[in-house]
Amino acid sequence: MLLLALAAQLTAGVLLVFSARRAVLLAAAVLPERPPEPEPAPPAEPAVEALVPCRNEAASLPGLLAALDSLSYPRPALRVTLVDDGSTDNTLALAQAWAAGRPWARVLALPANTGKAQALNQALASLGQADFQPEIIVIYDADHRPQPGSLRALVRPFQDARVAGVSGQMRVVNGLASPAAAYSLIESHVNQFVTMRAKDRLNLAPALLGSNCAYRLSALQAAGGFRGGALLEDSDLTLALAQAGYRTRFAPASVSSHQAPLTVAGYVRQHLRWNRGFHQVSGGRLGPLWRDRRLSWPLKVELTFFALGYADRLALLAALAFVAADLVWPGSFQFPLAVLAIYFGLPALEMVAALVLAGEPPAAFLRLAYVPFFFVLDIAIAAWSMLQTALRSPARWSATERPQPAQSE
Image (cartoon, rainbow, N blue to C red; front, side, top):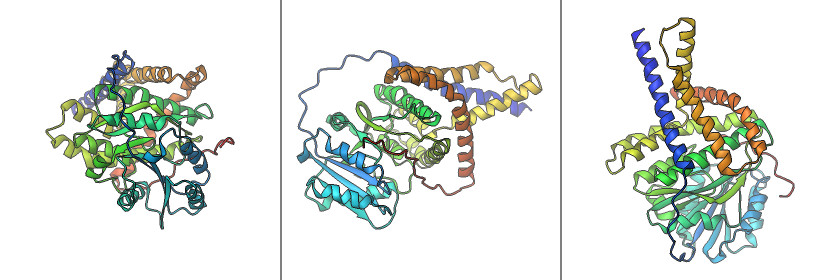
């Protein structure tokens, strides 16, 4: 019983540590930013290679191709490579037809499905076989719609030679369409307008996202490219580049829109993949990270929080079990209820702040009513994914549920 009582207090401490991190990031996100220093005249736009990995994306691809046509970036400094990853629909035909009339575009057709990370690696390997020599690699998923000025905003931070990766804003545009989409919108805004915004201000390696993101090619090659088989190749590179001494940045002015899964089942599949992906990252990167004496302690701590992903949900499960035991057998563990109040209160503040910073309409705030259900679902997903990892179940990639494209596309 004594050991369980100590475990209860340890669990409370873990939740307080996660809450303290949230408080620091929330404060950094909402406090006024220092006026920016005058920037020197911008240099010529760097040569950019935009990679579009796609598999069976015939429904989504036309909308992205139209958005790529509208990018306000000089075509002599841009090339688009559409990487068909063994599609079985007419994705390849669509890509080839579009590239045929554009000298700044090409298609790389892979004979069999290899997965996103390996498809991107094969595209990187093909760069030396062409005349175009890019400095920056940009990734777009087929369901994204980058705004015309987004690419310029995305590459601007690379003026700093220390920057190796930049993430732009990924804007959910169907957040009012269903409860699952609404929660995805809220979750996305908290991640970007609170967590990533704060980490960018504090120089704590804001995460690289899977689309509307950019890499300095030399740094990407030095890091070994995209980790084969990784479910979260972007998160893996966030740690790899930080450990190599580079900075990552968040560029909210670079906006690319996309649609979130509409159904609960689609949400569950997506978050199971993310949970298993974070398990891969923490298992492969945290040891070398902590042994690296060049990294600051604040950066090591924050990258550890990042790599642990949704692990605090498991600590919350333990806390709720101790609280339930205290109700059945009063005073058994004396779990401090104030800890739970803090743990739940800070995310509530984050959500409100994120919706305000994102400029969402009042209807989005009403969707906060869905949060309790999806938070409970998140806890179940975290527990299930941890069990799968403990049992060494194969981590399989699953396609994100894609709503039907809008008629305007």
